[in-house]
Image (tube, rainbow, N blue to C red; front, side):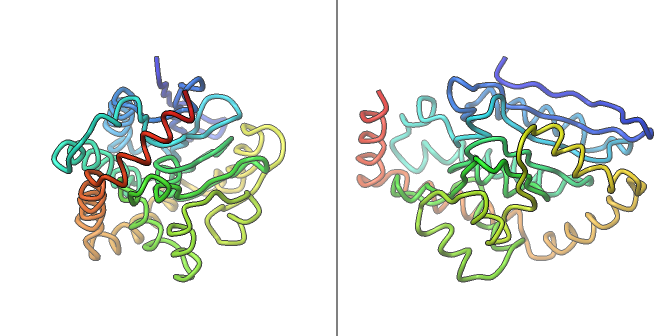
Length: 258
């Protein structure tokens, strides 16, 4: 199984939903099976009023998520080939971003490419001190394709630092991510303990309060046509996907990593 999810009650009667990518041998890269798992997870929790928080993580300590699995996706040659996968990814991230309950990315390792987009879709990002993250899609001559850059600019500031975060196509340390405002907190040691410590004060507040504040954000995003903007980001990526520059960059990457 390439993913798992569960809903666990807390001692004070709240419930927390957990989704974990379980492909450590592939650095928790997203393939079609993980996409289906995320959709199933979202179907299960979207309308459940008892859930206080949703947590997304990756198996192991090396990677939260290394983005899209090129072994599944590198065969796309044209914009038309790439569009269904990119559009589907953007729809999934939009659903994560607009869940009625707050979401937490528990970043226990590298979050790069689409993995950085996935984490950006969440409301909070708890980043292990050894972890690194970055919008590295530019190294493959494409942009982010699942709406992650749209979410980044919608949620965070300042503009110039965010533009560097995307356009330099490099990875950044946990401390730098905290400085940029992308990381909510940087933790040392056990990820589950860090999550418990982060959630403890918020679990003292009724879930309806958290949901009410979340709805304020989502109303703003809906007014700004966030869904359409994320789909446009996917469309732009699909156009770049069919370029010779992208195909050559992917071939170099696959050759280097054989």
